[in-house]
Structures are given as C-alpha cells and as structure tokens.
Image (cartoon, rainbow, N blue to C red):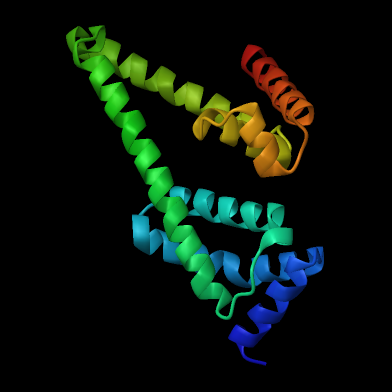
Length: 184
C-alpha cells in the first residue's frame, strides 16, 4: 500500500479517536516532518518543538478534524505555520530583551561579569529544562499555552477540551513542581 493511502487511512481512524492510528501516524511522519522543519527554520530544536505541537494539536482536536487527501502535505503546511508562530514569538522575546538591555547595566559590565552572567543564564536554562522534564505531557502543554502563547485560562480550557478549573489546577500543579525543582 502506498504511503499516501496508508496515511489517509490512519488519518480517518485518528479522526474517530483511534490512539493506535495516531501513534502509527506519529511513527511514520514525525522524523520526515522534523527534517522538513529543519529545512524551513534551520534549527532542530525549534523544528522538534513545532512538530510536537502539531501532533499534540491534532490529537486534542481529532474529533473536529476534516477529511484530508494528502496527510503529509497537510501536516507540512500545519508545521510551517507553527514554525512561523514560534519564530515570531522568539523574535519578539529577543527584541524585548535587547530593548530592555539597551540602556541596562549589562552594557557597562566588565568582560568577567558578562561571562559570569552568561554562565548563570545557561545554568538557569539547564535547570528549567530539567524541571520541565518532571512535568507530564499535559502539564507541559498547558504551561506552554499559558506562558508562551499568553492564553487565558478560559482559552486554555477551550483549546484543551477541559474545564477552566481543571486547566487552572493542572497549571497550578505544574508550577508547584517547577518551583520545587528550582528550589532543590
């Protein structure tokens, strides 16, 4: 059976909530999509992040997905849009950091002070990465929606098909875990 037909059949099963079909589609298309994303943005981490978001979203919204003839092409388009949003968000963050630091103290730091600051920033990144690994998939997803996408609890609940209270509690629990990991 050719890949296009196979993907189409998996997509149709996914639409009705078949987890095995979702995982089969994930296994078949994850790496091709990551490689495509790398060609788009030239960053493997960003491509992996965006591909994860694509698959998270299609599972979360499987009940409302439409029929698709060419699943891989559809997911590539979806991935490209996710990548553009992530890159735009990163650009905004970098611009904000640059503008905040343009007249800040770091411009007057000695080289040694600057190196210490960069190393401490790297330590914080490392601690954050390790702390995020302690979260469940759902907690990571909701933290991302709240703090990276800037969504309200109402929007998060709607997007994740949960009640507002469940979304709030999930984020609260995730923040407790992150706080504990940073204070350890």
